[in-house]
Length: 146
Image: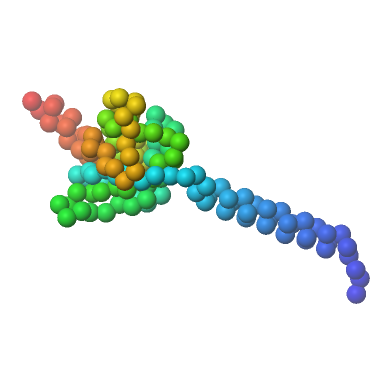
């Protein structure tokens, strides 16, 4: 049996590289930031699922943690916000999408007194419900027929 050290070294280097990428992938996809929880109630959740982004002015500031119905059949969306981001109490939250067929996300538009911020587990009261493409087309048709 012939010993080939070059193949052994190359195999070891490949294994080491694969493990490095695996650990980097795990590190990037784990939440290292401290967060606090907020929630909002919608009439239509519009395809928001656990893991979707929460953005403020296009910058990711959190992640959707839970989507469920309450006893009044409102869609309650619980989400976490990075601890260093303070959301003003008068902010408006709406469900938006990345393009026509894109992924859904929560968009928070800061409004009101910037010093009066929401506390942990508080609910954002100012919401804009999701409008699907069908809703928008029906509005256009309704306006055209008047």
